[in-house]
Image 1: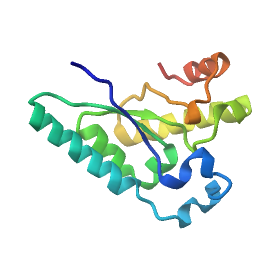
Image 2: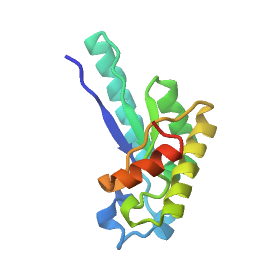
Image 3: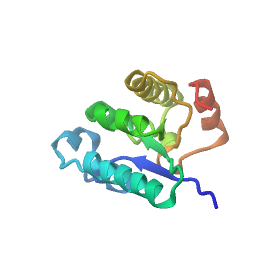
Length: 145
């Protein structure tokens, strides 16, 4: 039986329902856990491969702000054979962004991840599932599949 595994690589204070309590300008002062927790997850997936005797790979949708702070983590995900995809830069809801700001966020996060990996990034997951047909057009225009 095959499964599709995907994970959002973001920290506890970056989610939309906490934005009013932890605005982006406060993120540098928070207790970051994403590096350690994602590392643990990578170990669990490696253990699963050994237990099952087959490849267990996932797509990790990484926030650009996390990639900027933890570039080694992004490279480690890629090195272990998992797909690195974009979750935007600042976890802003796409439907609340002006088209020009959304396009900048899409391109900025993609370029950052590609620079870290030295490989193309094809996937994108909209924060908070804030997607529409119009937003999908912007996603494609930014070079995502």
